[in-house]
Length: 200
Picture 1: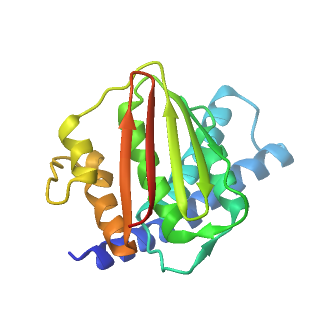
Picture 2 (picture 1 turned 30 degrees about the vertical axis):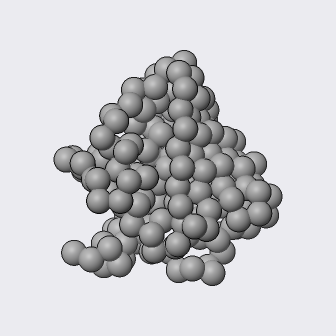
């Protein structure tokens, strides 16, 4: 399956799933407003689960869906997706990018988020900044759990060691960077990782 076809499949799956999940959420909210459902822990769990599923699908749609160069992505939508994704989780996001952004750049950032998440098993914070055409993502945590081969594959063409579906972002990100003509650099110490990307 080509990269373009894979992204279209990802977009289609996310598009088809978000509507029924949204409908479930609306139904739960309507039940609570009309008294058709109680405010029990079970109802709260359903509502939280629906919100989390919706947030993750919207996140995946950005990370794995199609992105056309020159297509912009509204800042407010990015902030909303990240806030909803972080709710109840162990990782928080600080999107310090002013204004809207190119969707391909946002996609690269979201794929990097997923790469960072694999190393931040105890949680932490990820900050995103943009200076001209250069993007900088900084992850901070008490400690990181790094798979050296996976991370080396992000910056060394041809060195891809992806064995499971949970690692697919490590295979996809170098392809996205190459298609966009971007170059990625990563630095790390004990409590901080920084990824910088921009035009090669």
